[in-house]
Length: 403
Ligand code: NAP
Ligand code: MG
Image 1 (cartoon, rainbow, N blue to C red):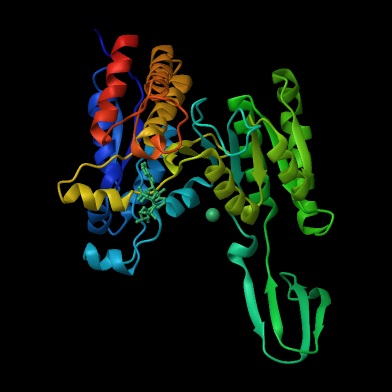
Image 2: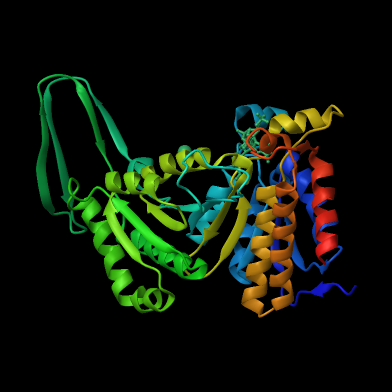
């Protein structure tokens, strides 16, 4: 069999712990035997980040800007304990945060679904993708613990130093709390554009929700920016594809999501997205089945698993024990990136391979072979629980039959 060739590289970003081990197995067993893999490799494993004072993370993000497609392994975000464990020179920032800041992207999270893994919500038949606006609001707020009686005011001074707005927020007659949040039109606009573009790319309808009946100016601005971007840039494309843009209040959205059958993108403000993505992920089953893609408004795509480096399993692995770590979300990060590379290069063979590999992995689970996390959720009568490596080799067996 001749291997599928790739004319343009994709950016390969390696990571840490158990996911680093899975990464190597996926490449060696499931991709390289079939594809003449062309990647530009960046090692974001913690030792290499330390060695380069984290420059490697910035280089990787810039490489995605150059090649437009990347695939990333989960990485450790160091805390005090990790600084000690890896004898780090610094407590480096979250690599995902650094990459997101350079690409200015929006993160879309979608579960991998299967008939034998029923979601907790019975009506859900198709995946629900959550898009979270990862900028501003309470994540960039200014807070104050009001210790005594007094007046709180909101004021704005223009660039000339003139106070153009001042209003009393509250006249405190007892201690309390105070917070100010902000957002920027250009950030909201690029969030909107990323959402509409992703809806077009994946041919799914887009829902957007805020609380504009209460926050008339703040959330009202989000609503208006989305409406304008839709009217000016996406309405025609949406109509052509037969998908819709639907705006509703956040509480109405929550009720409709639960009653829906899924199959759409739900764009959320920062806090709503934080909370709702955990709810949706849990209701769909396992964190190991949640995929994630960072899409930037100028057309760059970075695929990854939503879960972390699965530290607990890694420590078992280091002790020589077998683990049953699920490779699905990491595998779908690879297939997502290969398919996008194929799409951008007009490489149909590569796109078809991504489809076949996904199907092989899904068929493997549907025929009863899976890792421990899924065995606990699955409805099938005969289930064989496999360890990390056995599951990957079982997918290979299914794939070889299909090739
Ligand atoms: P985690 O790696 O997502 O794992 C939490 C638990 O979820 C695991 O202990 C395991 O449960 C289960 N799990 C997650 N992925 C699984 C898989 N593929 N197969 C089977 N079970 C899976 O989260 P964490 O332990 O809180 O974080 C570990 C490290 O990952 C941290 O250093 C953190 O900084 C990093 N992290 C990175 C990213 C990223 O790069 N995107 C995201 C989150 C966290 P059981 O132990 O019960 O089996
Ligand atoms: Mg959260």
